[in-house]
Picture 1 (cartoon, rainbow, N blue to C red):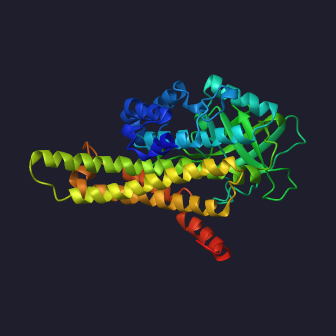
Picture 2 (picture 1 turned 30 degrees about the vertical axis):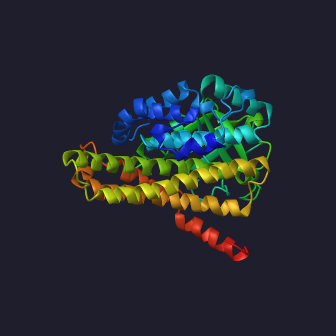
Picture 3 (picture 1 turned 90 degrees about the horizontal axis):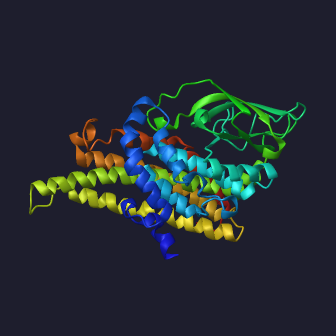
Length: 394
């Protein structure tokens, strides 16, 4: 337990966990030097992903029986956070991939999905998600498209609202109605290997931030292998692990962004102090305030990650209190990223405002605002408000 608490609680440069240390090293040596170019060109962070692949982070969450790393979700939350302090786009690629790896490890009980798990370990396959769909907004619990079992092979056509790094993925996972007569909420979950799916871009990706995720819209066409259809309904997958893992892994990105901003402000104030030995710069107290906020964010993230492990062992991940806590985690960490980066700009002043400065906060501030719109905070607060009406305690 002590080592698990250290994973994610310490400053990432002082990381103690094996996977966290690997992610930090990739961030320093590979992701950070390429981050501005990735952002400027809105291109896939190929260098960082190749390093992630070579260091076996893509299969870290898989159990040893699949030749995976046997890492816990706490381990990967800490790793994603460490990488996000250097490049949020690279960290999001790792986070979104890990969500799908977790789904396969927990719910992929067909021969085809088990073989896919082994290939992820052997070949470093990169997984992407195509759950969002044009016409349903952000509600991935519904689908318009449907699996067609009358064709040989089975087929699926979907107008995906966004498939992050889809053109670089080796496997795409997608939701669909069970058949054309099924209700929108009666969904199956399908994995498709490269060669069995086609992607036709239907939008560009020229955004304020998180530009390296390359989250374009696509017309997705899949030739479906029945062995790569999950054996349980998507609602079971979403409620029993997938949704919870998603909240934790994405929240790790927002905490990592807050740490990146805090590090800029800290370095700026330390440099000012060195220029005036014996005095404390006035802005030092603002850094102390940021540090207090950051500690709250770290602690909240680690506490919920540990709680996840406990509830998972008790088959109680659908606990209503935990559902509320994870929504609160998303709201807290996404606003932390924006609040901390804005405060850091106030500390660094013109040096943080200039794009060619070592203290520049340009990319960090823009990326941090992405956390506010990856599922609206008001939507989560509204869901919690309804749930609180039925609960006897907060």
